[in-house]
Length: 110
Length: 117
Image 1 (cartoon, rainbow over the protein chains, first blue to last red):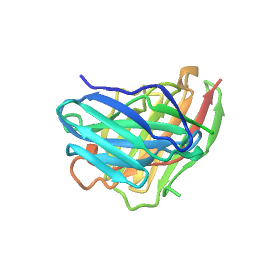
Image 2: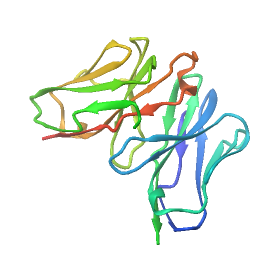
Image 3: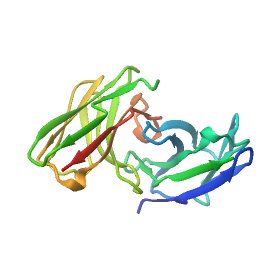
Image 4: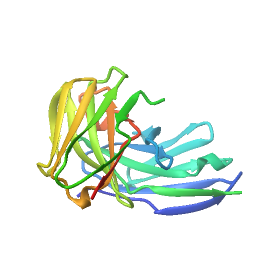
């Protein structure tokens, strides 16, 4: 079957580091996306991993382990504007589509 | 500015009304998508069009009817909806040239917040 699991909510402090985990079970897995969605706005692309390892992009990094069916999004030097929902999505070559998790709502506090 | 626009942003309709949602992408993409986003639930893929041909219909009730007149425009026609259809409806587009839409980065519009009374 197809399944994506990520925590529903997380809270972190401004200036800190937070890691948002995502586990997936996807037949024909062919890549893992992370999107950011502020309340009332469109989801925006953050990262795409298809190979194992860490991809760094400024304050945000994304990690993938295909053998473990696991990914995480790492946010450093948290800012108040990082308060948003973070969506994990796995691609399936079998179905030809993305399967989304329910999203992790991150609240950054002063 | 995402390059994908949706109108209207908010819509309230009765169960007997007929309305349409519009999506336009200015990115030169070949694939377009309709998603439903309900509170505390994952994004649900409804329809996918690639080069104006429907390639995915995810067991969506017939009261939702998509239309893709060209690669830049996508409509979702609504008829005899139910209160449980109240949700945020998101449109997205992607390049659609890779042959594997599941590896395409999708670009989303801001959504239409639909309330069915």
